[in-house]
Image 1 (cartoon, rainbow, N blue to C red):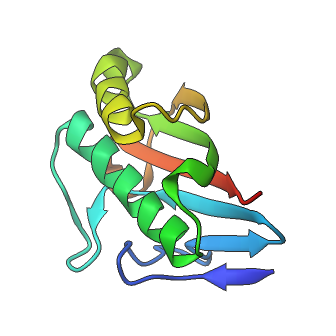
Image 2: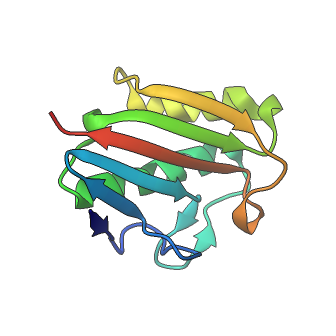
Length: 125
């Protein structure tokens, strides 16, 4: 098991790693929509938060030597599923033709009171 860390993604806000590489599988912890350098929220908009969370995931994926197309599954946690279409639009723009498996769930609260948090699993062939 190898810990993955990059300054290009927000620092962990608790006792966990940004990512863990186990064999050929990378587990990326839930990413908040924070700007890494300032640890501040990118925007109050769900679309912006989704995009930034995915960009933070990609920074960790790339730090581990993987690429976007190696992402096989994401879980999207949202405070309000009525904004699903906003999230989905940003998600589609980010992944384009690559379509990892996905779960989207509504939760009552997320760390730092953000509206979106996303985690991911990537696998190298």
